[in-house]
Amino acid sequence: MKKYLYIYKATLVENLNYITNILLGFINFFVMMFVFLNLWEYIYSDNTQVINGYTMQQMIWYVLITEVLWFGSRNKILTQEISQDIKTGNIAYNINKPYNYVLYIVSKHLGEITIKLIMFIMVGIIIGVSFVGPIQNFNIMNVPFILLTVIFGVIINSILRIAISIISFWIEDSTPFHWVYDKMILVIGTLFPIEMFPEFIRPIIKCTPIFVVTYGPAKLIIDFSMKSFMNIFIAQILYLVISISIVSILYNKGVKKLNVNGG
Image (cartoon, rainbow, N blue to C red):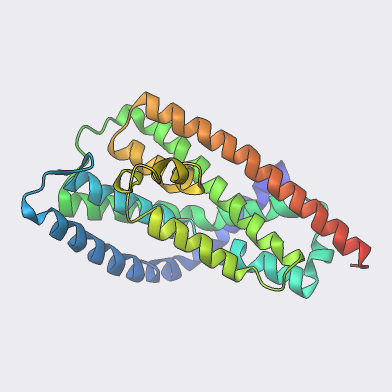
């Protein structure tokens, strides 16, 4: 475990030298948030106070939080580096090193996004407070529970992206699958809470990664309850176990396929 902690720390320190690049990423974030803020202000402009249980303030905070999680946890390590290692054959060299390749990628990824995610959270809080004020009825005592779901959401998202990239063992390019996953999380998981969809679709959405990656943590921040926390956290545990199992099976089969073909 120490070796992976070292990889995480080394990547974290390295990324401290590229703060400027992270700041440039805020341009796209500001543009998207400006559009969404004006969109929801327009929707609520007809004196509608509550839509499907959400006030305008809650809705804007929900979109803001999910966008922060989406932008703050993205990088090219999971979407491109793994696929490139497999396509170029570098994977054969990496799997022979004294560490597990998947855990190495996860440690490197988390080290790269830590600073970025913290910065996005800080900027998101500033934007939210400036536009609609602080979250009503927010209790600082709930932060440990919320933080736990945020961390689990980021980890689950990372593992699912790894699973998609590992498909490159069998197909030439996993990029289309990443595109579909990104659009599912962005369009369904960040722009609208689950409650905004028809009732017959909600159970289906709750079975997707959206529920544990974006919706769950955001929902707890704007409207916390211990019952909601337990439902979301249990779902995250199940998703974590399932996603790890899928990655393990795919990776082991991929490595076996590589060895059979002579590396």
